[in-house]
Length: 206
Image (cartoon, rainbow, N blue to C red; front, side, top):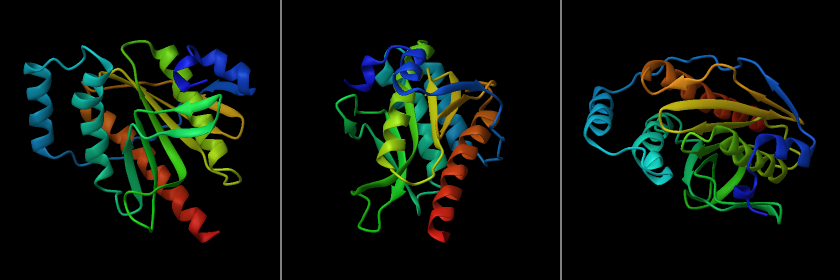
């Protein structure tokens, strides 16, 4: 069963016996947004058709923001787009974006640990979290014995929601972010990238 077959977050919670909680764990971490990015985003949102499909949302709104943040972390992390993630017949598919450890063998090698999963949805956030959480479970199991907190994002381009899977507990951040408040949104995305890097550093030092 592919990730897309999970149509609600409750279905994943029941299937994999995960506890659900809500709490604000995001700590906005300042990010210097280049002026060219602000201007390009304003142009695209003003003149372009940015949300007529999930593909458009990814290309116009989600990926540009993730990529801009990732530029500060590329030495240790690789941002993958629509890369296959397979654990077993129940947990397989192609998440929109995955942030993973950068392999010493080169940028084309998809390597553990898998740290951040991103799912795009057209306003269907419960369905989006169903898919994203299933992807997070797959990443957690593929990481095997590594004690890693898996982070997740679901976005319709405008609204961004954040969650984390730690052991058997999924926590959804109560506060959501919007692209209309770009500095706050970048602060949240930068925080999750930073947490991914910190976890990698901790693994190296163990």
